[in-house]
Image 1 (spheres, rainbow, N blue to C red):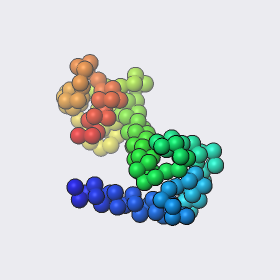
Image 2: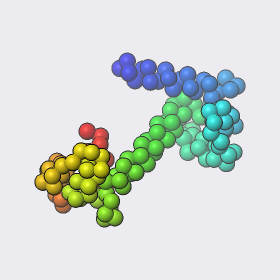
Image 3: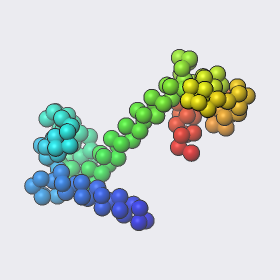
Image 4: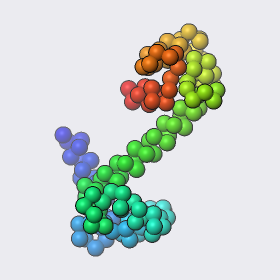
Length: 145
């Protein structure tokens, strides 16, 4: 409980810093200004789209809960891109999956050499459909463990 409470307090602090006029809501203009202060350029159109994507009550402004959902969604999207890049490093054979051979090759490059049989066993632990390889979804689940 304390962890989620402190997380909410952190969102509230960030929210208040974005809420330039103190009305309890963030406009697309306020979003652009704050993004600029942290070194990110955001066009007026992109700011409007971001606000619109998270604006559940349709007032064209973000309340705290809407802002929190937007930030969490952006973080999830970034994590997904990072995970996809990691998957592609291991995948290497262009087959859209991680094979025992591609896993062995990547582990060797990382200085953690394993025998092919060990790589098969590693894949087997997370191979949910039993096809002997890891799909992106299986890899994602493995990385969450």
